[in-house]
Length: 385
Image (cartoon, rainbow, N blue to C red):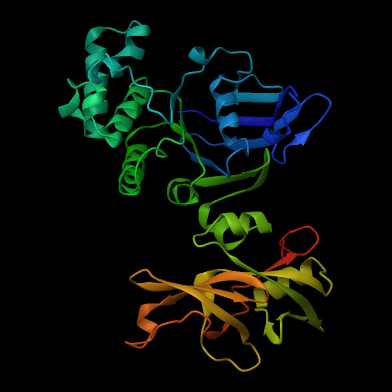
């Protein structure tokens, strides 16, 4: 039950001279800047997800909140208290790690009791908390087993149970599902959603899996090279990405990008891709007018599920089929168009019974002016915002 505020947080590691590990991180005379100018206000009992590719600084940020990494610059507040120099054990936080970190020689009950015994709580209180957490997580029947006798999903539940028995103000989770197979990940995502309704705590969750981010977070924080790219509700970020990186990172399969041109006739904008001229809808027109965007070369973004094979004269883009993947409810059609590889999602209900796509087959497609995204070719910024 706590607010968390990060103000101008930075983490700088000494420069070791190993260029391979720098990725695209900012390098100064002081060292490699793993996290730079990170600002975020997290509300009480909010579920925040930090998401981004490997090396973007999300786990480093989480470890700074936990007190496992020193903060180079900036201020960290938990429940209004400055905690930069407060020891991890005194921050009233719990953390769930990627590799479970259970004691193999202890039973499940003993693993869950351990942090409470360190705090010297009465035995009755310890039993009450452990039994309650085990009931919430559905692991009561495993309390007398050792971790080696459990599956990966069961071990992760035990790790979560050990964290929540402390009744922390803030629960930190560092890629807790990455060691599980796809089916277990789906099950555990559902379990975590149920859990957050049963315990009154603030969640900060780190993942590189944008599906986890979209399904779990009240808000998601997309990071790249130590810098926040965008913060917002999952659907907001999906519908209104602020730049090409966010647009390409959020969404499966990822957004298609084509070189194009933004044109303007009076107060009306349209995008041209090859010979296709696609007028933008009223909302996008208003956004571009408000920004006083001039006609220019652009990158056109459109999601695979928003592309249509319907024949609309003057608006068709020409491509060539490469590979088609039957996914049951839809076909993921890989094509090359405008010199770029992309994907079109075609619902199987829209296909004739014997219809199929062959490699090398010519494919004509289009999309509406309400679903297109317009990005600056120079900066990658979404020109609507």
